[in-house]
Length: 98
Image 1 (cartoon, rainbow, N blue to C red):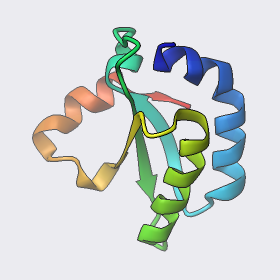
Image 2 (cartoon, one colour):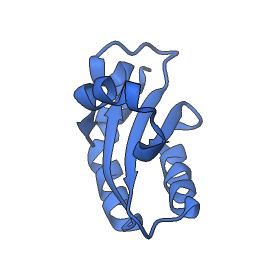
Image 3 (tube, rainbow, N blue to C red):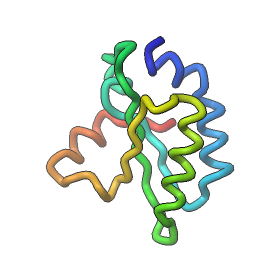
Image 4 (cartoon, rainbow, N blue to C red):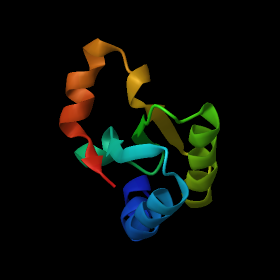
């Protein structure tokens, strides 16, 4: 099964989990091959998230743990501030809200 199929089948539940469990994080988005409609069965899914000023690394770890329930280990979780400036325009252009 392609990651996009798992994502779209669970999108509402993922959004609800994110809003309920992670108040110190915001703007959960998908980018990469899933966002471009180019994912294959061996692809992973790339998530982008923004951390609020009061967020800790434990918040990101908690979100990672929650996403594992849907995707196993076939996903990446990237915090917006960690993206090198040269990659931001392309990533932000293709990213869409969960």
